[in-house]
Length: 167
Image 1 (cartoon, rainbow, N blue to C red):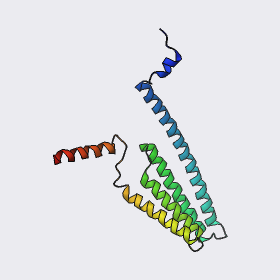
Image 2: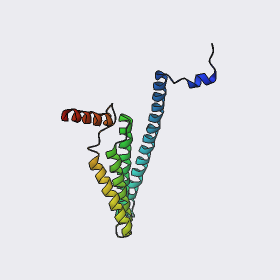
Image 3: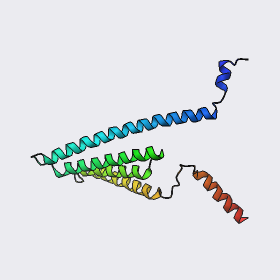
């Protein structure tokens, strides 16, 4: 007896088919990240070429422009490292992401100049940097959620063990 299209769509996808779909999507995602890595590497090479050309030019570039270029290259290197970690472990490293954010904020302050930036913006930037610093410190105690480690299960097991020991 043949099944109608409604009966076919109501059947759940087999576990093996679901794994195949997930692996295919992960491969596409890896391809996208590899493309981003290649593009980012190209941008880094172009930025280094431009930076060295400005250093060797007869008209000396201002110090803050050279510093901004160097910090921009460092930001690109950290983003490249973040993508490499993602390719290796299929997770975003909180530490590297926060480090990139901190360097990016500091680069903007250096490029604009502290004296030319309004005090409200400096205060907001300080608050943002403080939050990022706290996140860097707190991430040490955040349990990883990859490679089969489930923090909720660990918490429930610890709670049950504590409950049993107090009875």
